[in-house]
Image 1 (spheres, rainbow, N blue to C red):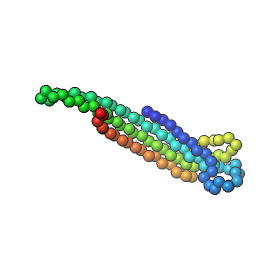
Image 2: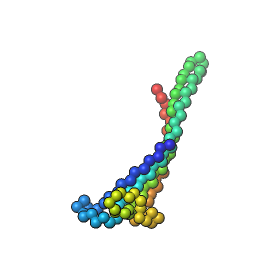
Image 3: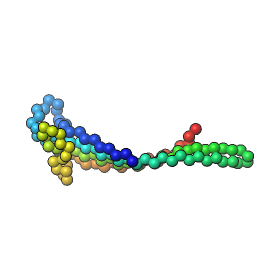
Image 4: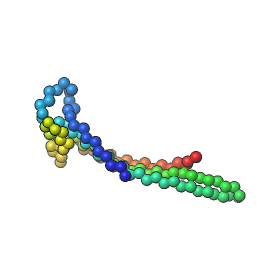
Length: 105
């Protein structure tokens, strides 16, 4: 399992805007990924002929949550939302899933 997060705090407006020490824009990303890998090796004999098969199976499931809203604009970075229950920007959750099976040489 892999867990991670990323926070970006600043102004999303024009770069030449004067800093009034007011609210800033906060973007938070939270990532959670589960990975399961399995190798399978089979040795088969058919009519006195041997064959070998080696494969790998992968299962990946994840979730990304991205939130954007206002944060306090003090001298120190504050990575908390002013209104966590009612974000001014967005709040999305992106599920993902991947299953793969492929032979190995």
